[in-house]
Image (tube, rainbow, N blue to C red; front, side, top):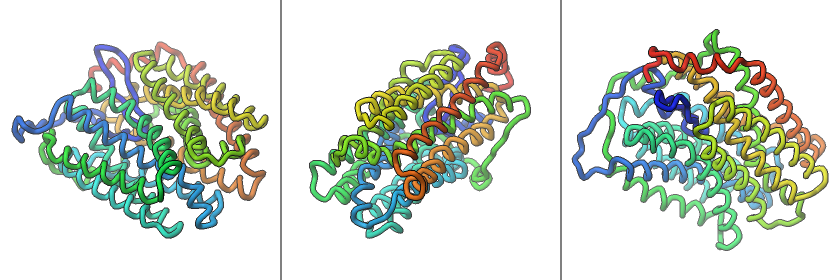
Length: 441
């Protein structure tokens, strides 16, 4: 979840939260000491950006891979939907903790060391998945996976911008959604067509990471080592008094869009099964695929639109899409459910992007890192906490369908609050702070 202000375009571009801290040096108002050593044969420029983007895709695909497998684990180890959502939720907490503490580390020790270490640890999490014999191993794997993902994504996004700022900005925006979508559908296809999918899919991902580690080892380092590595581990969370109004406008939609993503990630396949009566795993994975895929399309289509426009489109699409999915759940219509998911995905991508773009450019340079940290906390709490509560609702409340209805109504309510706040905000105030020279952009 990173933002970039372009003085020539007068707009910001926001990615999904996976790379929130990828531009820490300019967010903090500091310059980056570029290191161009390493020889002309080192991988750099646009080819390096494509390699780094493939890392984001692989890491987010890995995080989405367990979603189609939860039904297999549940049948094998006889746990409830509460456990499914807890396994999902601990990943969100781990990514959040890692990004808040390790997201700036590569500014001090270098991009490549952080990336190589994080990818090795991430491969270790896949080994835990592949050898899991019960729920404790699943929880451990998700925690390790989240910690390594958070550490890697901070360095990846920063390295992208070191190599090619314009292409890196765009790649930061679309890669996370592409990874989430492809991970869910690839895992479902593995379940459908491959033997022993709970092992093979993780081994295949380890192979992909190994190839990517070779490419990273050949990549040019872009920063020199600098003191302050330990100090960089301290999270900074700031809410400047002057930004309370815009933040209060953005927070409900940020929480809402990631709560929706949490529902699809944890219980999406179960909802599709309830609506269709089919146990086809590919069909179940399509829910997350459709949501993430349409979010990517929305981000690309609206990347140059004004922030208020993007957020407005996102809020309206979120309200409409979730309303359609709630109606579909009540009527038992799978076709309507997927149609609503497409619309809600547009709301997910543009609502998040617009919310971040509405707030971050208003902050002074020294305030941005702490402000973005706050927005990140909101986003990942939205991803994890409501999903866990939904698991309790499924088991101890009215069941899956009623839980989905109440969940949808809550998302709509939050989006409506954000819409009211957006309409009450004066448009003219949103562009003035972004043009201040003091922002050091």
